[in-house]
Structure formats: C-alpha cells, structure tokens
Image (cartoon, rainbow, N blue to C red; front, side, top):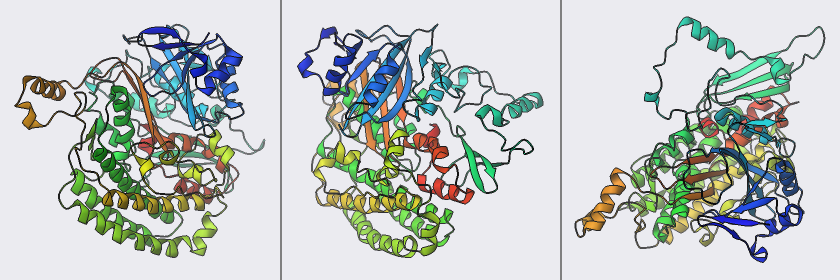
Length: 594
C-alpha cells in the first residue's frame, strides 16, 4: 500500500489524487515503497536497496521516461531529530530524476544502516551516475556495488575520513595544525602520481608505451584549476581523464555551520561568474520551506539583476571562446561591455562580482535613485555592440572552420549525461526552466528560448549569444514595468523588520534582535528549488531540522555534469579540438568542485 508521510505521521493516500508517476509505480511496485511529503511537492518515495535498480530502470523506461538523472547524493541522518514518519535510516541515498516530456521530477530515496553502507550502482542506467556515486563515496563512505571505478573524486586518494559525515569536523580550528615536512610531501606527491592501469588505460601495442599529455592543472583565467590527462596516438585523443577537486572548499559542509542568512555570501563563490544567480535557488528553497511570499517588486528586481549577471557571464564566455579559437581582439571589447554592466550591478547592489545581495524574503535594499538611467544607457549600448561581434567573429571563416562540427553530441547523449543549459539547447531541445517551469514571475515576461540543432561548439556559442539578446529583452521589460511596493517580505522568518518599527513594540524589537544575533529558526522539512542559471540548471536541496542552520544543503551544479561528459565526446578527436570543446562548455571550476 502506498503511504504518504508528513510531520504528523503516516496516512493513507487517495490513489486518485496521486501524481501520475506514483500511480504508474503502484501498478508494478504496489506495497513496496512509501511516499514522503516535502515542501517542494516533488513526488518523493522510499524504496529498499534490493529493488532500487528495478525502480530506477522502470522510471527510465516509462512511455514518457525520466530520461535525466539530475542529481544523486546522500544525507547523514544520524543526528536528525525531526523526521517523524520517515523510514529508519542512518544514511540516505537520494536520486533526483527529471522527465522533459512530463515536465516533472521524482525523488527516489534508499535508507541504509551505518554498519552496512552498500547499494547497487546506477551507472548502467545513467552514465552520469559515475561521478555522483564517486562523490557520495568520497564524502560519505557509501559503497556502490558494481561501480566501474569507485575512488575519491574531490579529495586526494590518501585523504582520511568522509567530510560530510556528521562526526567530521566543520571548522578549521577543530583540526590539528597543518604541517608539511619532506617525508609527508614526498608521500603526498607519490599518491598524486597518475597510474594509467588504475583507469583501465591500455598500451596500444606490445612494444609501445603510453603517450600522455598532462593538460594542467592550470588556471587559464576564468576556467579555474583543472587537469586533463590525455592518452594520445600522435595528436589523436585515445582517452582522457578529467581530474577535478582543485577548487573544492566544502561549501555543503559550510552550510551546516552557518545560519540561514549568513550562508548567502558563500553561494556567490560557487559559480563566481554568476553572482546573484547563485543566491537565487538557495533563498527560494528557504522561502518555499518557510512559506514566505516574496513581494512582486522584489521578484522583478531579482529577475533584472539575475539577467544582468547572465549577460556578464555570457560576454566573458563569448570573449574567451574566441580567444581559445585563436582570436585575441574581441575579448578586450567584451570586457569593456562587462564593465558597463558591472557599473549597473555595483550601483544597485554595492558590489560587482559577489554581491551577496538577495535576502530570504526579498533583497537587501530597494533600487537606488537613478537606476532607470543606468539601465536604459546599458540597454541602448549593448545590442549594437553584440551585432558587431556576431558580424566580426561568428561569421569569420576561420572561426567557423575551427568550431563547426567539432565536439558534437546529440540530444540523446546530452540527456544521458545530465547536460542542461546551452549545451542541451544546442542539440535542438527547447528546455529552459524560465519557460517550462516559470518561477519568480518569469511567466509575465515576453522572451524566446534560443535553440540550435547541430550540437557542436559553434552552436553552443550561438545559444549563448542569443541568450544575451533575450536577457536584454527581459531587463527592458523590468525597466518599463517595475512594480511599486516593498522590496522584502513582512515575515518573521525573512529579513528583519524596518528599524523604525522596532521602536514601536516589544515583539518587533525581540524579533529584530533574534533575527540578527541568532538567525531565524526554519520549520523542519525538506525543500529544493532549481533555476536556469548561467551555465545550466542549478539547484539547492535543503533539509531543515528546525534549527538556525541547515541540517544538510545539497548544491547541484551544471558544470559537474558537463565535465563528466568530456571523454564520451572528445575521444577520437584531435587535441586542438579538445581545446575548442573546453572553450564551448562554459566552465568555472568552483562550480564543479563546490
């Protein structure tokens, strides 16, 4: 029997009111799963690990399949107090699946006991489960039986412990002082040595040795520190191993020791070119959990500033894309345009790259005087410049020859590897969360979703350029139709009340004091929110244990999935095409590593 679990315990669910996917599951797995109610209303079920692969395969092969594994991670449940009605679990593995045909998601959970942390791998169903399962092993110590290469992915292989377990320290002051003598340095260097056989690489002949090229670890300006180990036959890439983790800062662990408000600045450093776009899914997840309604003016301000950061991100992408293809001049022009956009961002938020300006319930401040003029000047400036760039660069025969039909993949491959954003829309899939699942008032805006069909490096860049045009359309509509009213919600769990009101009554004064000194206590429960960020789908899945801090914050970033796809696309190509492929992905390594 299907059971629905909420904070009051278990209750029988009306089968006719169930989402379609749960009715389909009930036909095949009746009595073998339980349903959980979450604040985000995503159908969430718990299944035993003995049938989890069967359930996942069933969902993957439905007539309208859950074709994409959007996310896979875990939760250490051992210290969680408010989990009434949930199955007994020390550690929980969860799978977030997405169906584009249904335009809906489902979350599948598996409960594990501390002494028996094993569950089957899902890599035979979705190839992108590979890195996600390695991350869960790295951070939690959960073993995925049948995984082709279950090793650490973000931490060095000599690392001790699993950082997202609750017993693992959360602050640097709780660790013993770091030291590095000659013996330890030699040990660490030896463990960083790349061993080809460990990765299944084979010599091309009995009398031939491996030929390798280490691309990195380097920091080519905006991309970040990243290493690619290439096995070559001449200039042809036989195999490649992406090596990530050089930017890993433990942002998900930091969320467990920061108040709901004080974690906002940390989000800016995930995709450090996305600015407030990082803050958006986090604050919206908290707002959904707490039931906070954001005023229309705050929503529109958020949209406007998010689109400004989409423009600054895509301008940098466009300039570095051309630079990686051999053209030096355009990147300087595009940096000039980015500065004009940052002038507007700084005037509104007070900062440029990392504003930390969105707040739970609204924004930190209202729009300043004169914002109309600044925004209008930028809107008048940018379209003509963009036309010049397209004419000078994208119609250049050399650029076309270097990027067209290079690093191609189709829609089926993109969905299998969890590709979102421009990489997916360049394969002909018209999926943009702002249109498919409008949030924050995007349904009130007139804009188009750019789609191209070749799935190559050139088309990925074209999508990014057209995104800039559509962002300009959206910003102009914000300028012409900015609502009146408050810029933050009048809610006790949102931003503190205005200072003048704290002097009128003791309750408001107490609320202000607690909000500032301790931070709000959010209701117990789970909530997630995903947005169409600068590089694809970015989501925050938060678990609250009725505290001033998050119990667990899962950050799903797009480039983690995009880099994992690299070997399947580039193997068999030339090294020069690999550089173009990297340029077309839109990489920021902090977004991958978190």
